[in-house]
Image (cartoon, rainbow, N blue to C red; front, side, top):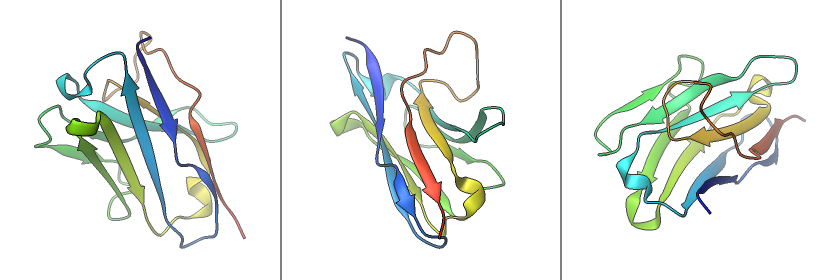
Length: 118
């Protein structure tokens, strides 16, 4: 089955860190750019970060720049999102996709919940 599975979310205090994983199954992820997206309660889904297939170029949204880092391990067919200095406004469900932009053709997975709270 071709799918991406997100994991690594949880409850963390402000200032804390989490590392999210996006694991591919059924296909080789290194042929694709991969993006991380998030959707907070009552808000539209937004792009957070993206990495190209060759691991030579990354993009991070201004809201997370300097705190989040996207990376990939093609040998393990996985893309990561290291999140440091988390803030309450980072609370959201995080998703990954083989795209750097939101398009209708994306089949979203379950996502992984991140809650930043005291």
